[in-house]
Length: 573
Image 1: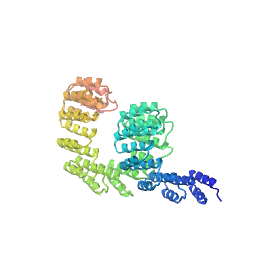
Image 2: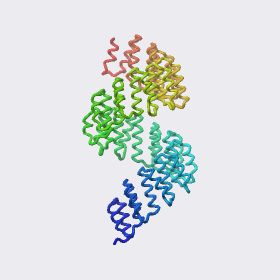
Image 3: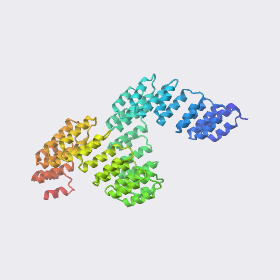
Image 4: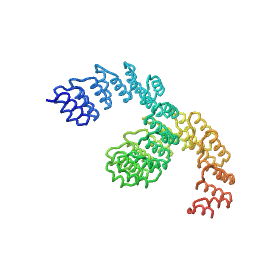
């Protein structure tokens, strides 16, 4: 006969050690089963995702207590069965703070703000846990003001509450406000530091991210990986790899980020070396190196397992390389298709609008990317009316990329007025959308209108970037408007606070050269804050040849790569 105390203790211990079958056998041998051992078993089954086993055990327990019910309620919630959790909660004879908090959190996880508010209002004694859950609920619904009001009304605040409101604010892109909250946290923990670090990195404020990273009292793999990802996405792949090589320890995510950074930089040889050094690879590792070197069929053949992403990467690689026949064969061989594969094919076939249309018609589940690819294909082939029809026929919500594709289509087909009308109809145009219209007007010689649209862009709260000015400057250069180019460059710095890059100076230099103002061009070239590149010196060389200044042409040629014969051939003509 099993003695009750020792038997219960043994069953609970076995459950905690994940020896569930032995624990259950022992539990069923007990003449008097207590709730402690039963609750340990319920929790163990729930943690393993065996919800039905947990439920049958819970319902069969002769001495079920509130802990048993709360454990089962949490199992339904974490298992994603929200309806069953609510049904179980409503049937509970007794509830405590844990019951209410588990159910409120279940509503938050399910994205049901209305039920979360209802439960919170009915909760007899909301505590710090329920209030923190409501901060998360409001933030998920985009109601940051209500989230902040809930936070400010809390009688007590713990580090989880601070981190929840910090996450809510940073995810909305309000970086300065997030930093103010971070600085108010009495004792920020590692989660707080990583949240603020991620906010800076995602917003592209890598200098602030690096400064914060250097001040962190304790770092984790998440901290290091955030820095690698931030530098990689900003295009600073050298800094990303510097962080990678300084890491005291790495996980698979670190290695995958390093491979992706090198691949984006075009350093495929180093990416392959990093891949070979990996102590352990997952499907993401294989897909990352495959996307980097997708034309190498050997990598695809060596993959121990392939998923839709792997197959889609190969389809995309063949399609983008122009091997549409190979891509179609691989597409037909896929056990199942996803929109990524079809979208890649349509985008690759955009120069052949009939093939793109045939692929579009065969795509079973069209998403916004599918429709956008077709809009771009029609517009790029000069079929503007078809592009418009495809855009307005979209049976899914149009995103900013889709709207921008139509703007670009209107612009490249000469529809300046309609491009502007499309921009005006957009709910939230981004900088790319505005830049498309600015460039369209500038390239058609409407410089005054282009700069006016630039000012409207600023008035809407969007900061213009370097791309915003390239179109206007290039137009000035092309039609030889020296004063227009100078005014545009000056306005860029003084009015908009955008620092010109070498491409912007090159446009002004080209305008000066075309107008025969070679002395001014060389003065600008030598005085600009960037090192002149080969394109800059080649522009001066070409202008000097056209305007018969052999000495200046020869000087420009000497600044170019001596192994390149092209400059000397230009001089000899």
